[in-house]
Image 1 (cartoon, one colour):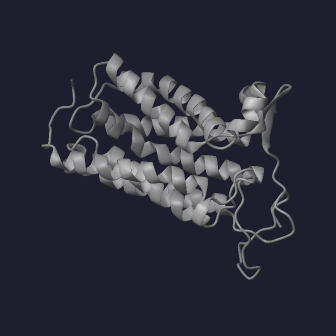
Image 2 (image 1 turned 180 degrees about the horizontal axis):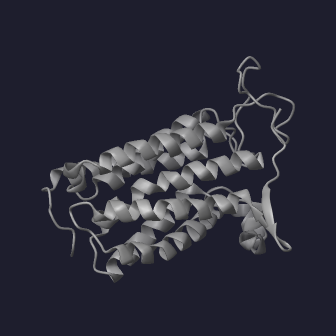
Length: 268
């Protein structure tokens, strides 16, 4: 049986602080010093102060992009009928693909504003994104949401979720935390430690896009599709469909980066 976790971590007076919100806050706190350290690696990209300043833009990109992405990709008709519900983020509903678009736009605007190389600066930020993915999926698990497809009762870690009916299911949130989070983080940090890869601006960003698309597409085979969408033609899910352009963009970006000459400076 699924452990009876309380989705509220603690209260600050009358204000409940949920594990999901806490996951966002903790991920930014952990990611910031790592991003600073990556930024200090050669070739030079930006100042530590600029990395700190980007945190505000990143938060806006994640929250606004994640929410609007969920509204547009997963439940457009529902929110069109009840537009006020768009601001009810406490009821859940965030899309990683929308959050990714939000962060890309935030990176583009911040780089333009500070006269930084967009691809070079993005390469210093994306390696830490899996930290937020891992903690966010753990929060999904604590909330007992986004559970997996029915699994064999013989599977030792199969679980009966409170809102998933009486059948044992895959804890797909934990699969995603391990693949999109821990595994992808290890891959990204290893690649970021290679000077030759860092000098091909855009390679790390492409690697992240491709790596996430592969991890998410794999985990979608164990995750129950959203009830309002279900399976699409051919048995694929909306998550897998959204990963296709992400994977193609990642391959294209890595190819573009490796064909460009290795560079020792990243300033515009």
